[in-house]
Image 1 (cartoon, helix red, strand yellow):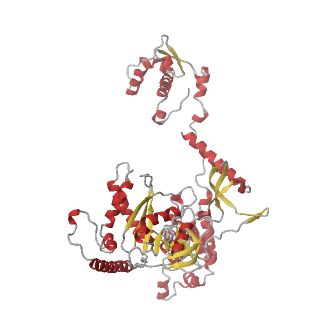
Image 2 (tube, rainbow, N blue to C red; image 1 turned 180 degrees about the vertical axis):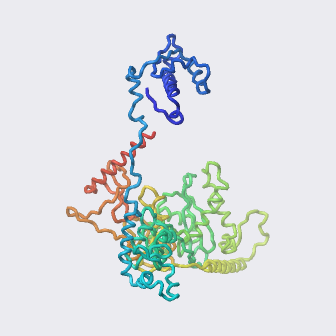
Image 3 (spheres, rainbow, N blue to C red; image 1 turned 45 degrees about the horizontal axis):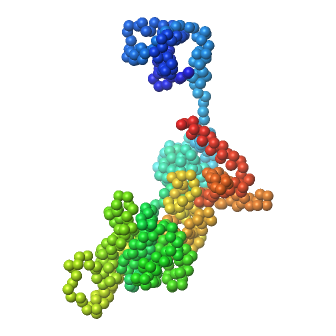
Length: 606
């Protein structure tokens, strides 16, 4: 056996290290050596150990070791190391040699943008271009020739300038002449380089102003950071406060209805989802148990049996863009029935806000009453519907029951009035309540519009960034995905609050977006957005260049690879079968080798 010293044991003196070797050997082979009749012969090249058991004074560590050794019958004998070939060889293993490690490269040279060599080159360029800048000529002439004879006003104006070593300085900082090439080099160095790390406007300006100065440097840093494609893609967009655009007030109950699903529920009486249908006028609701796998045809049957038979066909419906709601069957059915469907824009639930709020009420109600195993929620749904429709709504000031049926339901039989009013009186009362409800709804929507905000305006052809928080990309970690995607071109203005974008085919999402998810793309000639490279023609076929293979998977015996295409963003990543990557075998080989190394490292760490 052979062991290395670790922790505090590495600091033991030779005597204790040699004795520890005996302790460890007896521990290792205890089942063979403990309570033997004949003494175990222990050989060591440290002579002092022969007399260790005879010592009269010892410390606490030695006392513990003596108690352990008392279980063994052994004798210690001295033998020079030269005569102990195998044990001596084990003690001289090359991997135990305490020699200094060979130097390792911790950071590659390319990350050092601010090396003295690079700085010297920039300073030389500044020196060459100083006298080519006509705006600096009077300052240099004043400092070199006329400083003593100049009038006081000139001396005051140029007081902060100095001329040293053929360089112009302003308040101790090197003046950069009016050269766009020089300024861009410095801005790239103090913003784009890995050592700078794409800081914001203030930090970029601070890094620059430590050593350099030029007129309008603050504006230059602001424009550079604002137009930086990397910063625009990876910085979190500041959501503007946008004025809401409320929907039109319907003229009577069940003229306009909105609907949505609540999913993620456990199975209850064969159901695992709830279809929520809300009337936009009276706020009357129907909570219908169903399944999350329901088809468009099944959804139409639910409407017929649970909603339309009670209230008739609506003129307009509002829903999100779930595939069930946008299915061909439902669209065809709406067309035949003369119903106008409206869909909320992508990733903007406020468009269908009333249904979203009712969803919250249903979830709260069910949490309050369901059993511990949550399996009886479907039984509570009729009572949840009753409780919701019997509660006064903040927008109308009346209960949904009152606006649909002209009265509130009876909760206690003793409250039934003895005299039934005449039919004409009921009709008049209902008509009056409808007018009051309509007036209340209009006031509510006026308050919504009254909360003024800034609505960004874009034109067709403009390039905008799309907030990426709702878009699932094909990458290894959404934590490191870009915050914004694009930039994408606007192809159509749907309304003041929604725009259609030109998206890549690989991004399979709806192309109409709420204006709050968009932000203007800033571009400058010095920082153009990278153009998507066209495909190369190889052996008569168009092919795109593979930048990196991100992941792999096997399906039905075939290998597929997740590809990051060169010159394209993460929204264009795609899974490709191995047979279509015959010209990318080197990338596949590197990816497989890297995965094998990772697997080996993981196995070693176990």
